[in-house]
Image (cartoon, rainbow over all chains, first blue to last red):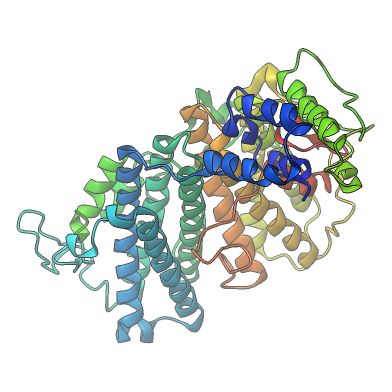
Length: 293
Length: 229
């Protein structure tokens, strides 16, 4: 057993390891001092205790729980949406083989995200039946938020019969999901495990958004894998989902003043190069019409 | 076991590292360790540019990667691969402009704290060949995503974390597009995602050796456990 080799390896993988096991490094000093005195056989137990202290599970804070539960709500919506698309014979009949394969992959991912968040939240997870009307969503965007009922009379009436409408709603869901995770990330600052998990889902939602946009482009829409300007989807009902995506000032820097390959950065490139966050209150307002509560 | 030769007493992190080495020497004295523990010889002659520490260190890490990506796509558009379609050229030009914008943004944001401009080495890429170019692009984009995801937790300022978040999702959009160009439907396949359908983060120490494979100017991160050799 090469304990110092192990420390060095951990130190490479986790630069804060030494601070983690002891902010003042007393523990490490102790190891050195007893290195020559303590029976070698006892060292693994000392390390075991240190590891528990360093990585032991501590109860997540209320902020972390709220953030993860909000993410779970969005994932439940997305998973239910894609499951409905996979189950709809008219949607399946209207999608090409490539499109079907994209949708089925994304569906599997969203269901995996639900399971992951449920397992992380454990008994703190909100229940699927707390959403929509007993777990039933209104994918037309017609959910009555006063009576909590599905009306099926929202702006996307043919969402589960017309593949193009289905893809347009999928696009809005994915792009909004990216914005939501991005908006939530700063509330997880300093929480290595939870923040990294949220970032790892965030980038997958962005991969999805790009893929769905590629499918819409393939169907003739004037749309790119990245967001140009604000609402570039051609779907006026989702304008609020894209509000602010045309931002050109990043961290106090006006990006159109930055040099480009020739001249300065174009407005289009400056808008596309940065995705924009949305706070959870705004996102909640956007997805309430589908039954997220 | 060699002792630290680059020890700067004013550098706390360096001091910490050399302390561990001292601890190693002490314990080795009681015969606990085998010779294998000496395989991490940190005496190096060409460690290149170091990203530093703290938030500026992480931003410099990102700046290094964006420099590499920007230089790559500038070359891709300057000498398009044979058979490039009009649409591919248009999208790859977009990506070039995004990466150049990211590079210039970090340069401006870091100002006097920025590392120097890096010299790339793309000798392993055949820019006239579509497969070679797109596979390199895929590697750059996927690595960028895992790099931002893996280093996000090290950022202490929520403003900087937010900015990194604004960029990483654009990198993920690029990765998805490039992957589908290579093989439709591979936008988020099992080679990048884990069983929970999540991207798999990489540490700085895992990312920089990959980046250095494409750099003449090597980049080190001595505060994050990686020194180029």
